[in-house]
Length: 155
Figure 1 (cartoon, rainbow, N blue to C red):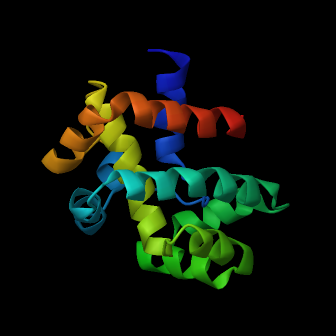
Figure 2 (cartoon, rainbow, N blue to C red):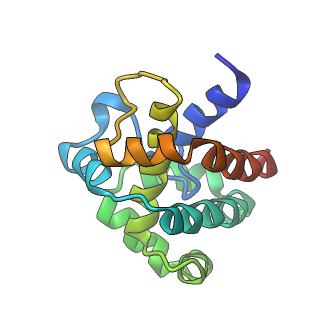
């Protein structure tokens, strides 16, 4: 497994918001269905990718980042989204990219998992709808380049 693939999987497990978004058996049926229902398009993917870099930079700059991650892990997805939307800086990042907290928290893992699935990575916690998988396969080169640019800037 390449270093980039491993990084993608790790980033899938811990989103930029500091919340745990994918833990295989720990994902609720509702969270799984939300990921499957999220429809990816190129404009939507570009919104998400642009927000990932800014959100990550903001969240990891917080002095209590590790504690926030632990606390966020115990929140429901709706509570995580509300928390993001209440925080002035994260709300501004979401607004600048035309996203809601839910869009971000569902869309980022939906995008990452669709790309991983399009690359042929088969793991129990990697799920993607047929439509998102087809989208990712059709746009894999472009999506990977954009995501690697954002992920590379995060290191």
